[in-house]
Structure formats: structure tokens, C-alpha cells
Image (cartoon, rainbow, N blue to C red; front, top):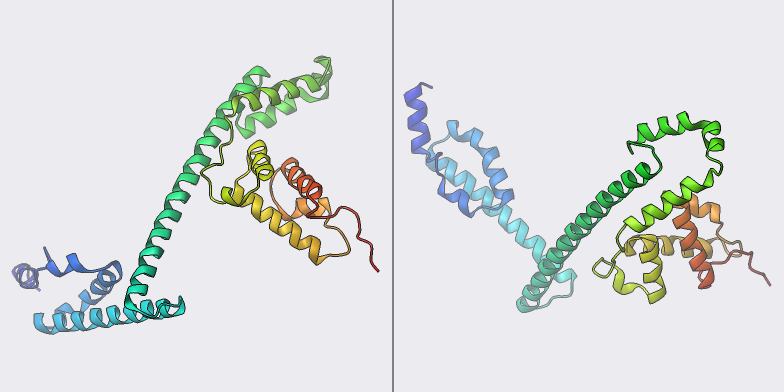
Length: 255
């Protein structure tokens, strides 16, 4: 096709500013783009008829899927279906907003933790807090370095205290799942910087394993294997569930 022919083709098909694309959904636009390859083999009217037919079919299929979903949800009238759709959209929006807020809070906490680590390392004279530098610092110190300090536990204790003081209070009031926690559970999550959703999952798994293995208890070592997080946090959750009587440390008596 010559250059003039290409220009004429583009203008005839209104490809520079196609009006119908403004009213199309994402799926319809993807279908429209896939059908563009057939333009050169069809007249303008034939191609428009093809696109309109397939887009109409796509819309009908989508509407059928929506009606099937409404029926499965127990809707019997159009008003009930509209109410269900509005509620679903609201829930999706709220879930997306909570997820974004949770991600932002996690990122902010991580940044604070990094700054706190750098502050602690400066107190201990370790310089850079990157993983590689920390390893090199530990190698350079060795056993002799610890002995020279007189009390090897002192620098660690000081660092831990500095880190704890530097971190802000862990506020879970707006996080998903907080409303499902008792006051002691909320305190546990706040003190150990746990997301409520993560705690609830740990609680669910440990209780399930305790019931599943009855009369044998779920072991602390099993809990370490279930959750790939700091063992000290696992210990706190494990001990808390023991105190609440939700799991058992000793083998239950059988009759």
C-alpha cells in the first residue's frame, strides 16, 4: 500500500480518533485491538459489523455471568441484584483501600527500622548496617574482640534497648482483623509488632494442629517450622495460646 493509500485508509476508518473506543470496557478494547488485523481484508462496513457483533456477544456473556452470580448470592429481583452489586463494589473498594494503607504502614515501619538499625550500629561502632558490612564487622571482631570488651553481652543489650526505644508504637487500630481480637490479643500484637491477620492465621494453624494431633500436643519446634518468622515472636504467640488453654503443651490423658 502506498503512502497516500495508507493515509486514505486511516482517514476512512477514522483510526486517529475512533469515537467508539470511548465507550468500551478494557476487555472490549482488547478485542477491538485484536480485530484490527482484519481491517485490510474488509470494507469499513464489514469490519464495523464484525466488531459490533463480537462486542455485543462479549457484553451478553458478561451479563449472563453477572446474573448467574446474583442468583448464586440469593438475589431474586433486579432491586436485590443492584443492591448486591453496590455492596460488592463497596467491599472491593474498602479492601483495596485497606490493602494500600497496610502496605504503606508496613513500608513506613520498615524505613523506621532501618534508621534505628543504623543508629544502633553507630552506638556499637559498627558503621554501615548493610548485611555484608555487618558480617564483615562480626568476622573482624571475633572471639578476641568480645573478650577485650570485658563483657560481650553489654553491647548487644545496649543495641537492643536503643532499637526498641527508636521504634514507634505499633498501632493496629486501623488494620484488618483488629476487630476480631480480644484486648489481650491486641496487646500481644502491639507488643510484638504483629499484624492482626498474621496472628489470626498463626492461631488458626496452631489450634488446628493441636486438635488434629490429639492427644499429642503441638510442639514448639513444630510451630517454628510452620511459621518462617522470628522464633521469639513464635514463642510469644505459642505461650499466649498455652496460657489461654487453646493449645496443650503436655499430652492429654486418654480414657
